[in-house]
Image (cartoon, rainbow, N blue to C red; front, side):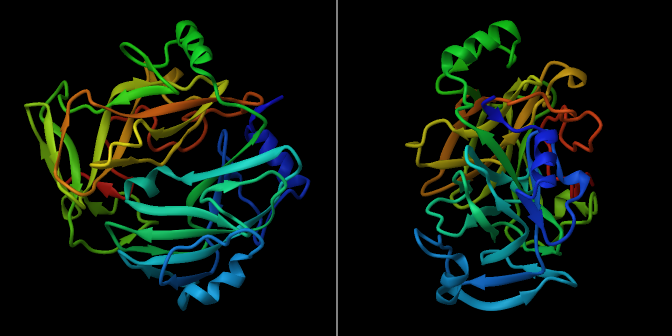
Length: 357
């Protein structure tokens, strides 16, 4: 059946050798509809980001771009504003009919840690064609904070799919009629649109802005850092926020969304031609997000960067969309059920490394 592969299908690919790794793949790497990927033991500092290109291997192109090599075994700092390449522990040998897409994990995106997958012969980031057989690499560019990383850390994840899985707008409307996907009116246009919340029901805290000169974040230290050392709170009562060029923001969607167990979703920009700001996401929503025990949906955290000019963002402005996909089969476990899901039932929330003062 066409669709996104669930957890038990991923385990089968591991058992048959289609997904292999330098170290045994851990049970906690397997999510309801994706596989977490682990950093290897080496990183290269690059002078520029690159793609291998048709007929070329990443290892062949590395000599054109590498500045120096780093051993991650005892931990190493990836500095803000620099570009790094890290071979991942996992390797793929995709069977015919299966392709794959990668995306940053939730905490990776909330740290403004640009992490993209590249492959041999690749002409796009985060995309693996059917039949790909070879190593995979993470390109990492910390943009707001320098970070301490170690081998085995999981910054991005891989979703495998068979055939056409994306729901058309007609199918999405029918699904919403059967099982509401969003609170309030559903804006369906090449996916399910959602907007920014700048009028919270309680208080006046609408988001956070990354502070420009902060310390190093050890990604393994959960709840270890005071939020105020790294973030400025943003408060408003007039439903408007002026974004500063070059600044990074954490905001939240006005709508609460739900992903039924038979579906998965991925965030995408709403209007590519809106050049004043860019909403970029840790883009995978697993089956069960905002569903069941979470009540009536969970809100999406928005990671926003302003570009050329200051831009006035208004309450209710549509900024993104969720593209829903069918699952090839029901996963054995849902998001937030039987697995450690840091963001189930979430509202406005920073990455798990931070704590309130």
